[in-house]
Image 1 (cartoon, one colour):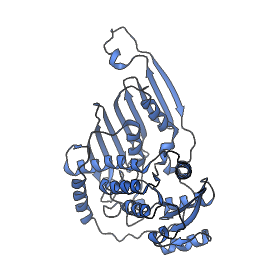
Image 2 (cartoon, rainbow, N blue to C red; image 1 turned 90 degrees about the horizontal axis):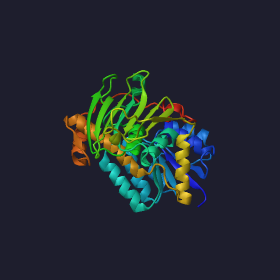
Image 3 (cartoon, rainbow, N blue to C red; image 1 turned 45 degrees about the vertical axis):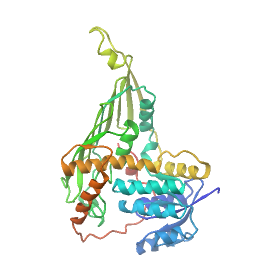
Image 4 (cartoon, rainbow, N blue to C red; image 1 turned 90 degrees about the vertical axis):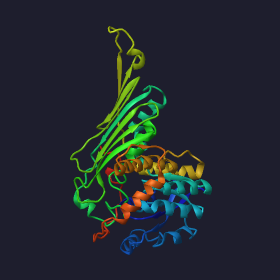
Length: 388
């Protein structure tokens, strides 16, 4: 195989952007072999835009057609695991949009199916390509930051108007979307948080439902995390703050990292703070400051290129599908904590979470909102990369 023939399932805003990128040749080694959507109005538009590309209204029909080697899954969240599992059963490689799913138990099934199939499994965590976050991870992995003491991420610039939530029947409902800001906007940040700082051992959270919008899920959340080494972390996110803030601060025993406004500042200490605190009052601890600025990147295309090279040449995935479980574990734990009022120890009690989520779905408000068939995007919107 020297070319990956890909089919895209779900041609909404992000799915149509994927289609345009692949079709125009932006993803080396990948060709657009098929498109699938259940919306007949979209299929009519797609027929005019991509006259040579086969169209399907049923995902399984596309998977078993023999036309594709891999699929990109860009449907609403609940559909990610079952479609991925089906694709693996047909011997296809899979990359899914974030989040991996709504509940960890279903994502675990997807991971097992991927391993059983032996196929490449990726997730669209496109902000891992941001040079600032990659450098922060490197500083910690190399030991230059020392032991992490505390992390604080204020990521409140996910502002959304009410019309955004009113644009589709699935949005901001437990039955359609499966959550709010933690499941829709913040998965990239939750992923980066755990990618850089590691997974917590426990989570306590307050998730405020409909604080700023007429919705049945949270539009604001505050997570307090504890880590095995005694470090703590705070994660604050919202779609109701304008203009909002995006600031990540990580304090370590050998330095401090601050990422904000497209710049990373690393303050490194001459002496480890554990040693410095025991020194004489007159002793000093000189600080050396390094600053680097964000560089332009196309996260989605870069992830698709990496996914393609993983299939063709065995290149290591920057965002393996298995990693989708980590960030979802944090958001599931945050919901469970908010629902029960308790601190949640990890690993998560999947059975308890699923039972409480089921109750949320059963009482999910009915809606007469109709899914809009907006004009299909040809470009990746800037909001899907890092928003400073």
